[in-house]
Amino acid sequence: MSLRLLCVCAHPDDECFAFGGALALAAARGVQTHVLCLTDGQAGSYRAGAATGQQLGEIRRAEFDASCKVLGIHHHELLPYQDAQLEFAGFSQLAAELVQRIRSIRPHVVLTFGMDGAPNTHPDHTVVSAATTAAVHWAASPKRYPALGPLHVTQRLYHQTQNFFLEGRPQPLPAPWTLVLDIRSVFRQKIEAFRAHTSQAPLLDQVLPVFEQHGQQEFYTLMATPFTQPATQSTDMFEGIVE
Image 1: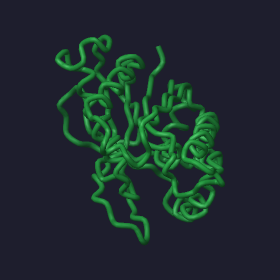
Image 2 (image 1 turned 135 degrees about the horizontal axis):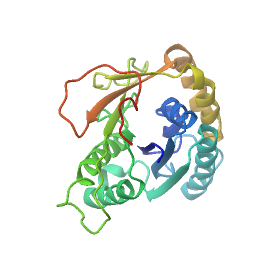
Image 3 (image 1 turned 120 degrees about the vertical axis):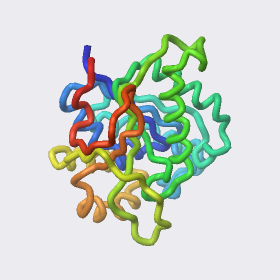
């Protein structure tokens, strides 16, 4: 049985912008990687000439497919929640959808955003963090959604965090990291995946200098495990995982 990783994000391009290094490293070592994105990005600032939100959503769905292919993702899925409106989504229903997928995929590791909303403090990122965190705990609980498949205990839940702030943006309140990934070996792959989001090219132009300065590492905080343990520093997301 291979190791399995599930990444839950909010928008097409989150998978590479925030998690691309971790996903590419995992795929390269033979981990079965899954990405679940909750919206198709219809509210994006960069429209790529799209006349309607639906048109932009179709463009960004295709870009998401292409990016996941670059990163070596085994399976990816995009849910029909409304971009920039996740804070108004029904939390219980959203959590149920995530519980169902966690119990089906049975990941050893789950990745998602931190509660700060990432460097751009996006509320959709915060909602994804809250719902995914709840779902990881509830997927292991016999009291929650008993009809959604057999229970599953995720061995590690990580929140994305950072060691820098974006200039000109409100500063988030990031969590201290416990995991630092050296992504130099897959850095260009991460950038190539971002380039697959051609509609977001102006965004890449803005953040590429930041990536060049800070992007050789990704930072994560271990938020949950099945065991009581002290916080320690690590450089391997899967070290000690029991298959």
